[in-house]
Structure formats: structure tokens, C-alpha cells
Amino acid sequence: MPIVKGNLVRQKMLSAGRFLKAPENFLNQAEIKTVFAEAKNGRRDFIRLAFAAAAASAAIPAAMAQGKLAASEDGDLNILNLPEHSKGLGQGVSAAGSYGAPSQYESNVLRRQSPGLTQTTQSSVSFAPLQSLFGIITPSGLHFERHHQGWWDIDPSKHRLMVNGLVKAAKVFTLDEIMRLPAVSRFHFIECGANTAVDWGNVAVPTVQYTHGMISCSEFTGVPLITLLEMAGADLKAGKFVLAEGAEGSSMTRTIPMELVKSGEVFVAYGQNGEMLRPEQGYPLRLVVPGVQGVSWVKYLRRLEVGDMPFATKDEAIHYMDLQPDGLHRQYTSIQECKSVVTTPSGGQVLLDKGFYSITGLAWSGRGKVKRVDVSVDGGRNWQTARLESPVLAKALTRFSLDWNWDGKPAIIQSRAMDETGFVQPTYKQLRAVRGTRSIYHNNAIQSWLVQESGEVKNVQVS
Image (cartoon, rainbow, N blue to C red; front, top):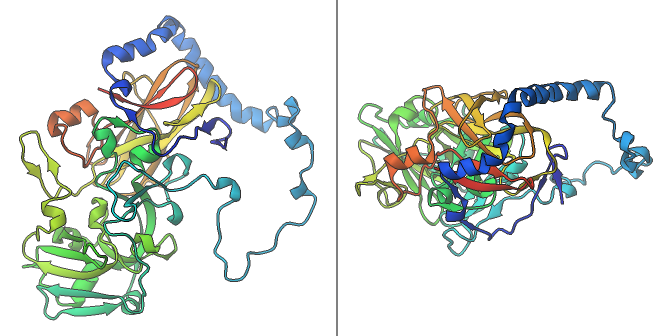
């Protein structure tokens, strides 16, 4: 099995179709007490263990500096014997015309599909492997996918973007004309409104790839939408909304508030992570609407219409709405609220032995920067403030980490994010008190991972 995170955690291979029903993975407060009952007798040693953990943590880099942790001490032949790659010539540069690929030993790090979600003639969703990623940027080849009528590889020389509606004169742009304009490059996350939908419905899928994998973060490059509207002579007083329409078979259409456009945040992108957009990400043009659910980031963008009221398209009138406890629908719920998830240790992984671990994960907010992330290892009873790794950017993923000394006893790991507006990520109990249980969108509740004595990590819910 592949070893990840410095040989401390191994990924447990689970079939894509394995789903764990909620009742056996849902813990109430009484059951949490049972989980931790075994550790209760050791509470008098808490101070001693805390100091021991801190000393062990501090000793690691010192021991490394002194060479005391060299693998040769236990006779590891991989360091004692000179390998072939240290004795001969390696391969030359990649063949002419080739495109670089990951190592053969990383072949298990893939986007994965879920058989439990709605299918058309093609799979409509693939999930990013969050448990295998570092930093905040998602490689283009691992970026999650969401299609409403499959993806297309469109000839850029024939693709056109029209701006019409409340404008002086409708204007049509070619890709070359757009790429001649002054560009911006910004880092932003994109999250599907239905991310974490299965956990919202009390179904515990096994890994973080399936619970939270409909989110990714990239550097996008393109032209501010306001620039294109001004070139067409848009009426920015009467025009209150912009309709974005895609060129795929479903004609995905979404309403974008003009105040977002005027802020300069919204832009028409042709680049992603230093290269042109991938076909599955909307090549050659897509809309970037920072902080707003992914369905509004219309792919294969072909038309922008300026109007004076919301357009109430099919994807806004019957889809992507939240059914409230009183039976009413919450419409145009675009902003992705503050959210976080621990990616290591997480479901499907196994801790090999007790001792030092670095708990790490991702946090984000559609309203700006992440201000703080707290981590709990006892199901939310006590919280410690995690480190925010740089860079911390607005409406982008933020990496956090916390040093942890696992004593080999059961633990429930959680993370709780707060953004710069003061919004604090809710528990499932708090979220359901407001939203009920019939919605499938915008689940930003606290995620819980149960570390068992065996070291196996499972997805559970804490009420």
C-alpha cells in the first residue's frame, strides 16, 4: 500500500461504491463519552503527557539535526545499499512534443467518480483527492469536475462571446480579442453548492475525497467582466444583473448580481494554473465568480446579457435551491459560507503507531479571508488554535496544521473555521436547527473523523 505523509499514515484502499449508513456512524454526546471512557483514567496524567508531547515535538528537529534519526540505525537496506539510480545515467529530457506527467508511483492519486450520484449518459461528477494534496493549489489534472451535459473540446478559433441586453450595441468577441486585453491573475477556490451533500443527508461516505472533494483552488487568468461590459456600452445604472450562458448542450445559465461585477472581482478566464483552461474546466472561456457556488462559474461561456432583474432560469427556479423547514425555498443562495475539513488524518487512512502527527486540512470562505481555525481531538469538548500556513488569501483555500501526540486511544478529530467577517463554522445541530434536513446544498457543518485504537479512521457525525 502507498505510504503518504512521511510514512506516518497509509491510505486504506476502499472501493468507490462503498457507502456506510449513517445510524452506525452517528454519535450523540452520550456515545462520545463512551468513546472516551477508556481514556478517562489517564486524565490525571494530562499535564505530564502534554509536557511529554511538547518535548517530543521539539526533540524531532533537534534529533534530525544531530543525525540521531538516521534510518541506518535500524539496518534499513534502502539507505545502506546504493540504489541503481545512484550508479548510472538517468533518462534524458522528455520526448519532443510531450506533456509532463506525474511519477508512476503516484498513479493512485486520481479524481474519482461516485456511482451514488445522478448520472446522464456520462458521469457528471468527479472528486478531487484532497487527502493526497499539499498546499492550497489543486493541480489542473486533479481539479474536480461537474458537468451538466458532458464536456467538450471546443475549437477556440470558432468560439465567440456575445455581450447584449442593456448595452449601446451588442458586441461579439473572439478569443484572440479577449486575450489582447489587460489581464488579471488571481487565486480562488471553486466549490460546488452540493459539496458534502451526502453527509448532509446522513450518509457517511468513507473518505474526504467523497465528503468534500467537490472543491478545488487554482490561479485563474483572464479579463475583468466589467471591462467587456464597458466596451459594449452597458448601462451600469439600469443594469442590475448579468446573465451568463454556456455553450454546452444544457445551455447552463446563471444570474450574476451587478454589484459583484462592478467590484472587479468577476472575470472571464482563459487561463488556469499557468496554462490554458482544460476542456473539462470550460476551455476556451469560463466565468470566475469568487466566493460564489461553482454552478455560477459558467463554462464554455458564449453570452453575457445585461438585465434589470434576476433571470430566474431553469437552473435557478427548480435547481440549486434550499428547501427550508417551513416548506419555502431559499433561492439565489450563492455565497459559499465559511467551512473547513481535516484532510489528514481522515477517513480511509490508518495511523501506523501512536506518537507525533501533524493534523492538517483546508479552510475557506466565500466572504473573504479565513481568520482562524480551531482543531479538536475530543469531539468538540476542547479546542486548540491551529497554524494558518501562508499564503492566506481572500476567497481561496487556506492550509492549516496542528501538532498532535496521539496516545493510541480513540479520538474524534474536528476543525472549526472562522472568517474575517466573524462567521463561525456551525455544528450539524446548529445548522439543522436553522435549515432543517431536506436541503442538499450548502452544507458547511463541522466534519468529524473517528480515530480508532487500531489506527483506522472513519467518517462519523457528532450531533
